[in-house]
Length: 445
Ligand code: AMZ
Image (cartoon, rainbow, N blue to C red; front, side, top):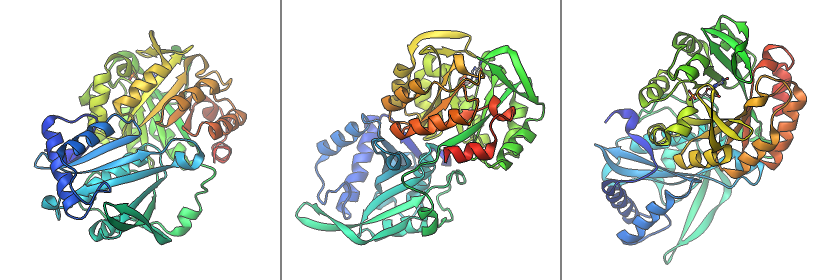
């Protein structure tokens, strides 16, 4: 098994995997507690527990394997998005490696991958608490840059014992760290950095769009290929310009690819990857595991799946398992109905229904575009975006229609009631200079 498969997000468990997971969990409980239990609960209880948690979209189960067999796991838990602070924070729970598989760096690998998944989903803070008897775990979290906070432990009853726990937190930067290596260098954030991240106002991420047609950067109106404005024939220079302007992510779409059903601007995408100093998400023509994995392995941080979200949801599920936190669903709708194949086809599927299905498949985020507004500069469809963000618990990125700063301010305001809104894609308005990068970032901050 390759190193990249050492840690996986699981969406379902085979009988063998379930048995191995229960075995590992029992061993961890016997070794000093886990899941709030001090005594093994019996196999049935654990089986019910793991099967049940797979049914809850807010809980993501990650497993780590040794020679193919599950020997540990961790859960990422998204809080209900009732406020801005919750929308920014994710909780890590029940991370353990069975005693018989320790001292191989598997705990670090698990933590590292889970952290990258949280980062790719747009979360900025990861919280957890650890019983203070678990010195090895505390050591692991401190080495990974978690900070112990609060002056008092909290106490919990476990069986007939009282166990105290310590709170840990880590501020996640936006840059995905190096691919999974069981040992990695810790990155320690200072308390100042945490303090400078205001809990009451979560910045929305602005994703500058680089749409590629015949190797050049273009913008279309309502997705029509013959209504293209060419802005640059040097995608790498454009990527550098957006990075220099202070954007923290790039959003690239291979337009020819979306129509053709396979990547058609690979050299331009590669040039952007080489030039970019921030993470990038890429969509357009990614229709099988080979295309998805080769771009993710080439350095794309997240891939966007549009047509296959409608036509092959099993593939989305498989990709989410293999690349936790790195698969995004692109839901492009015309009057609520989802379009595919470069938006040339419109399906019967409603955007909200597809969003729920994609959440179940395990996507990290959803990008929602109202096609009739895309490239028209008349403002986002905020109503539909809010509805979608309040329907699912995964982050939602708004797209289509930004023409000025007021449009961004309106989204900022809407995000106060719909904290699931994580960011916005802007294209033409940036290229035309109607919106300046610095002002846009300020409005969204
Ligand atoms: O503008 C268009 N006609 C267009 C476009 N921007 N068609 C597809 N796309 C984008 C989607 C999504 O990011 O917004 O391509 C991606 C989906 O591609 P695919 O091949 O997965 O359907």
